[in-house]
Amino acid sequence: MKVLIVVAIAAAGIAAGDFMGFQPALTEASGPTAGLLGFALAYQSISFAYYGWEDAAKMAEEIKDPGTALPKILVGGALTVMVLYLLINVAFLGVLTPAEMSADPELIAALTISSVFGPAAGKAVTAAALIILLSSLNVNFLGLPRVAYGLAQHRLSPQAFTEVDDRGTPRKALYFISAWIGLLALSGAFEFLIRFMMTVAIAVDTMVLLGYFKLRAQRPDLERPFVMPGHPWLPAITIALYIVILAILIGTQPKMALGAGAMLSAILIGGLATTRSRVNKSD
Image (cartoon, rainbow, N blue to C red; front, side):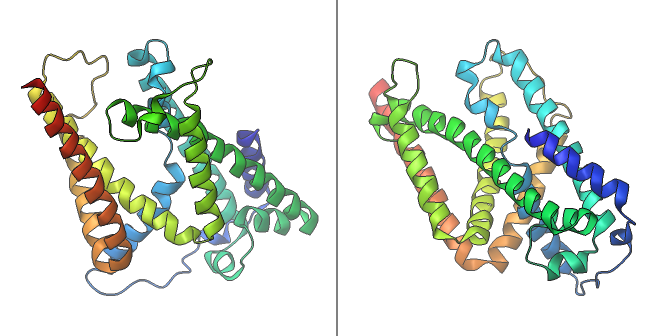
């Protein structure tokens, strides 16, 4: 249903638009670092739009033959989402200019359809957007409890999260994640939360990529059913890009960076403590 809504909006905008939104309408930023700053800030929002493409990996334990299935799911899903997002953005720019988008507080998809079919159609799109939002939240309700469950198995979160019901659902972890998501939603600080979350996510993804190199060096014997394309240059370039983005975000958003740093420090301290505990037990 979500895909059909996005395709319908994209088709309407592309068919009815005059594409004036593609005309140069924005003033160019000045200064040697302005382009990098704009890129880093824009990347936060863009990466948030795509984030979640990896959620299937969080449920690998429930997937048959994950070594073969997961790469197809992840790559296929990411490519599908990319095509949909490109189409709907072409539709937005086909009907609206960037100035019109920034001047109106209305949902851009609703504003686009209102411009083509009238206000009533715009309200219908707003209602459809709420349905899409609920389905997106549902993905978090499915994936995040599994993360808490996995962490608990390695003693990185409360042991209560390892308990599952008769159907294999980590119910206590699910209740905790649901309550936490609800509290964040009630805070209303959506823009700050998005920027905060993506700063942490970019930092964590950087550590995951560094771990990828470490694991290949320390455990070359591990079975690897999927070979990363472009190894080692693609992950190395991604790490370098993420480090630059993080440096810019820390320099321009110090309060948010402080909170993100505190969270990352807690993660690192917890991981080191767990590793040390395992080493001591093995000795």
